[in-house]
Image (cartoon, rainbow, N blue to C red):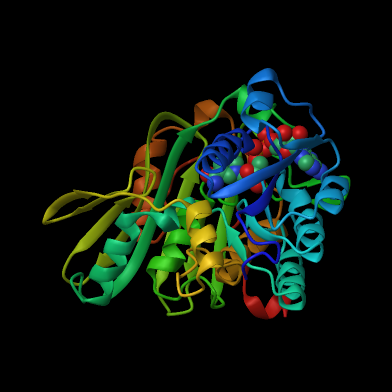
Length: 376
Ligand SMILES: NC(=O)c1ccc[n+]([C@@H]2O[C@H](COP(=O)([O-])OP(=O)(O)OC[C@H]3O[C@@H](n4cnc5c(N)ncnc54)[C@H](O)[C@@H]3O)[C@@H](O)[C@H]2O)c1
C-alpha cells in the first residue's frame, strides 16, 4: 500500500471551510512533521489568508476533480457537503487515492453500495470520520463488555441534547435539507450531528457496524430546520438482537453532553463520547483518543495496524440514515411546545421508547418502520 514514488503520502484536502478548517490545520501539522506531503486544497470558495498560510505550498483549485486529476494524490481528505461525498469519493478512488471520508459516508444506502463497489474495484482504503471510534473510552468499554463486566447486555440508549441556532441552519444551502433539486442530502440530528451516537451504539453492540440491522423504527420532528428533522428518536433492533434507542434534538435550550449508555445485567456504563469519558458504578475514567488520520497513515504503512473506521463498518449506520430518508416529512412543532425536552429525551433512551411513546404532548408523529428487506 506504500506509494510507488516512496516518501510521505501526497495528500489533498477537499472542502476547506466549515469542518474542513480543522482538517486543514491537522494536515499542516502532519506536513510539518513530515508524516505526509500536503500537496493540494480544493474548494469552490477561495481560501482566506489564514487558510492560505496553513496550506503553504499546496496547490489550490476550485474544482476538486480537476485538482485530483492534475495532482494524482495518494490520499484525499474529503470534507464536503454530504450529498457530494459519493461522486467525489469515487473520483478520488478511481484516480488512485485512499480516503479519509467525513461522516456520514453517503446520504443513501445505494450511495454506500456504490462506494463499496468502487472500493473493491480499486483496492483503496477508506476511513470514515467517526472520530469517537478512536476514543480510548470506547476501547475500554468494549473490553469491559467483552469481559462480561457489565453482564448480559440487554439494551443501549443514546441521547443528544444540543442547541443549533440560525447560524448553523443558514451556513450552507444543504443544511437542514432532505434533498436538493432531487438529490438526497439526508441532513438532520440523527443522520449528521448525532450520527456518532447512532454509529457508536451499533459498534458497542458488538456487531461492529458492518452487519445488517434487523429493524429501525423512528419518529421525526422539525422546529428550526428548513425541511429535515432537528428532533428525532430511533429504536433499532441490531444484528445481535439488542434494542438501541437514540433520542436526539438540536432544539435543547439546556444543552448537555451526548451520551451512549450500555445497560447490562450487572452494571451499566455511560459513554460521554465527545469527552472520552466513561462512567460506571465503579466511578469515572478519562481516556485519550487516537486521531483518524494518524491511524489511516499508520494502517497504510503497515496493514497490521487495524483501521479504526473502515467504510464497510458503516453499513448499520447508513441503514438508519436510509430509514430516515425514506420516512415521511418530519412533524412540524413550535419551539415553545418542546417542554421538558431533557427529561423526555433521557426517558425515551433509557426505556426504549420513541418520543411518540413517551406521552409528551408535542410528540405526535406517526412512527415509521424500516427493515433491510425493503431495500433488498
Ligand atoms: N466528524 C465530525 O464531527 C463532523 C463535524 C462537522 C461536519 N462533519 C462533516 O463534514 C462535512 C462538511 O460539513 P460542513 O458542516 O463543514 O459543511 P459546510 O457546507 O459548512 O462546508 C463544506 C465545505 O466544502 C466546500 N465544498 C462544497 N462542494 C465542494 C466540492 N464539490 N469540492 C470541494 N469543496 C466543496 C464548501 O465550499 C465548504 O467550504 C460533512 O460531511 C459533515 O457531515 C463532520
